[in-house]
Length: 187
Image (cartoon, rainbow, N blue to C red; front, side, top):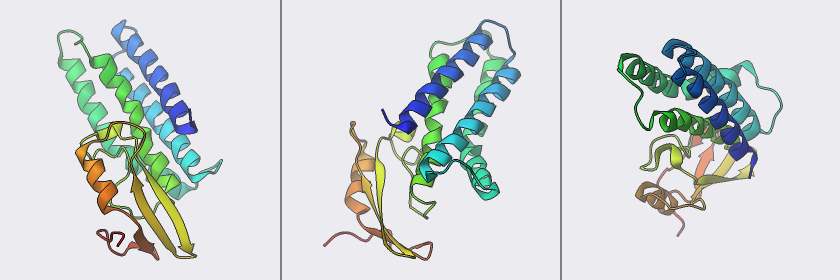
């Protein structure tokens, strides 16, 4: 199990513990949201550090991690409202709550890919597999300002989107922070 998997597992357990407090009536939906949002923010920063291979984050890195998680926090808030307005807890809600842990894949991959302007990041929700994506980018530095990036299928079943990305996104060139041609393929 790699470092990202360990972070996701630990975060999932913590989110489930907070959920159980909510379900037991020990906290309100608003408190559940606040505690879960804090966990997501903290683990998003840890995932970004892991991806970057650094023990600290700059203020810019922290801003990026917040930006990357802002959409998930909006989804979490909508879920909070659904919980608050429901007459009773629904089957599957605990699993739904725990699934937010997978959102930290995005800051991890953003760091792992050196924050390059790639067309998508594994787990960013832009593919049919959404946050369940196990694909990855293979990044090679060509020179000081140029990188080659290839989308690689992970060790899981693949959605149609990811299969197409693996065909289309081979050796994408990023030069001086600009993606040169997102449709460049191997000859």
